[in-house]
Amino acid sequence: MKLTKTDFKKYLICPESFWLEKKKPEEFTGGEITDFFKKLIQDGYDVENKVQEMFPSGVFLDDVDDDILVKKTQDELVKKGTIFQATFKSDRGLFLKADVFKFNDESGKWDLYEVKSSSEIKTDLMHNHIKDIAFQKMTLEECGVEIGNCYITHLNRDYVRQGELDLSKLFIFEEVSKRIEEVSEEVKYQVDSALELLKKDDLKITSCNCLYQSAGQRCDCFAQFNPQVPEYSTAHILRGKKLRELIDDNIYDPKDIPEDFALTEPQKIKVQLQKIGRPMIDVSSIRETLEKLEYPLYFLDYETLLKPIPLLDGYNPNSQILFQYSLHVMREKDTPLEEVEHYEYLANDLESSTKGLVKSLSENIGPRGSVLVWYEPFEKTRNIELGKLHPEYEKFFLNVNDRVYDLMKIFKKDYLMPEFKGSASIKKVLPVLVPELSYKELEVQDGTMAMSAWEEMLNTKDKERFEELRKALLKYCELDTWAMVKIFEVINKL
Ligand code: SF4
Image 1 (spheres, protein in one colour):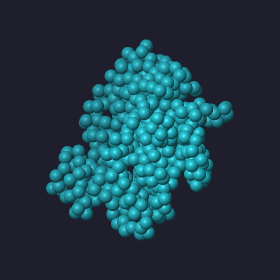
Image 2 (image 1 turned 60 degrees about the horizontal axis):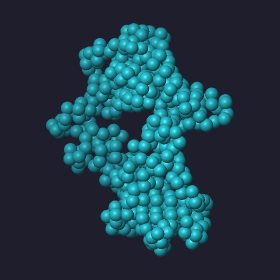
Image 3 (image 1 turned 45 degrees about the horizontal axis):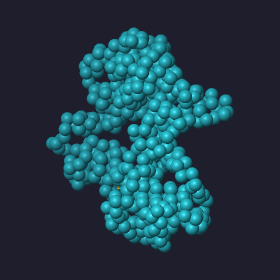
Image 4 (image 1 turned 90 degrees about the vertical axis):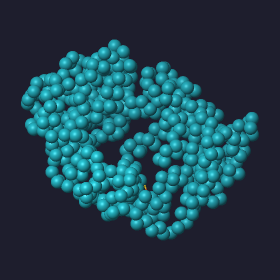
């Protein structure tokens, strides 16, 4: 039996799906490794590598065979130095690889460091950094190692890069021994329960706790355990006591919600939409909105690279570097689509990324006209950041923000279709309103893929690949704003 710290974290999130993944992996439908998840893993390694630089005498242990790693660790322990990936397995199967394990000459004990790429210690169910390190401490003690201080090392959100990275300011080492103490009894009990669960060869799972949670909380296994629940269900509209009432009455489909069931106005609209199965469009409200827009109309979209370690001067940890924009411009009302102009910028290197972008954007967005985006907090926040990074353009970006209109708002309130399944995301709206436009054939199909493609573009020495990636990125971002133009055309025709 083997229980790793990752297993333990999965157990804490959901014992049922943990058991299924470990005991019947062939039946487990969750755990898909998405591009975004892969990116998070890589980010984690990058942060760990930087922390290792702060322990220059550290010895990195590496082997594909865990038993060999355990043996190598024992050999290193006698040297009383610093070990990266020190590996331990207790008699009852608790297993861990410690990020940094350092002998403390003063206390004569080993100090444990857990490295996180976040800018704070998290204790929510999905992360729970304290229980994570408490599990490690417990495992080490079971292996007979005396533990001194325990640290969680995370990024300092207030650090702003200027020149070379200052690692001593980039990272915060928080001593958490007391916090571990507070949860240790609970963790002991939970570890015992996880091991007990693993002994079971069969587990009757007919339904799971997330049945009563709002839809966003479910894991990928939900449909497997709850076949009676339709893809778009009452949990997408309601939560808490009201949701529980419906579930207890076996009502999962919004269409089955009784007419006299108490709902708020927005909930009523969502339920009604499913019941009548036809679009609900408030033409006069949309017309009023469109009349307020000022021409020329600028359809704008940004692409960014999110990195835990700041790559450029002026950036904090976990901030976004803007490297690309696409802009479609409709000069006048009823401009034919073939006359809609297109402008774009894609940085060829890291250093000039935002410098070139702000210059290009300021040349292509004029002093008048509405700027249309989809989900305004993203573009508006980037504009504020750009203004701070390039003070000579601050006025320009503040002015752009004053002229931003979020097209998404129309699809939250005035243009509702059952097919959107309660969402106003462009990825849900576009295939319904403009089915001929699709991202499926593109090499880059979403924001995470755009981040990876740009990173690859910056690092490749192969000119052909560089051009391929450049083209793919330009195509993707152009489609984002062209999709807005086409959706705008649909609502404009109303
Ligand atoms: S949906 Fe079910 S299996 Fe998945 S996390 Fe929730 S309770 Fe666990």
